[in-house]
Image (cartoon, rainbow, N blue to C red; front, side, top):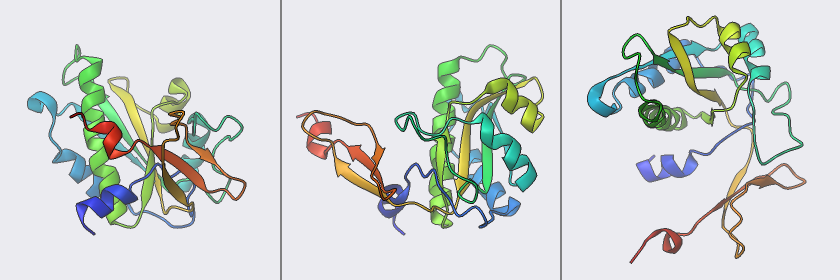
Amino acid sequence: MTIKEIVYKNRSYRRFYEEVEISRQQLTGLVDLARMTPSPKNLQALKFKIVNDRVLNEKVFPTLAWAGYLKDWKGPEKGERPAAYLFILADKKISPDIAKDYLYTASGYVAQSMLLGAVEMGFGGCTIAAFKKNELIEAINLPEHLEIMLVLALGKPKESIVIKDVDKEGDIRYYRDNKGNHFVPKRTLNDLIIE
């Protein structure tokens, strides 16, 4: 695939073929992409936790929020849940006074690298920034010096995502039709490029 094909295929997937596993080696390969991603000030203050164990996955799942615009949807059903999670963590020992904006910027860089790598492997994922912090920390047994910045939910996508132009009213909210197809409005190039 070309980089354009990979980027176009990289969507926020929220339903997966749960039985299709992602190996620790594959997940470590995604962390290696994160490791080689540019880091502001080259601080490299992010660490990563790999979770691909079914028992631990069951503990992680209820701590996550899944789709803000889909108010009546509580997240994927059993059998459609992620096969793995990658946690992007800030290491406060590296720089205890590090600015949050730095951490979010760096987290975004590495999240994109790992998601593009997942697409290349035939997987997909969703970046999750809304979670029950204390419950999640307990579920993954996280040391105090590490702070969860983002969670990547990963698996073999089990949903159809349709990209469409933003309508005349400018509504950017994603939605699902009665067949479960997921529609994502995107602004056109003409809307984005300033002359």
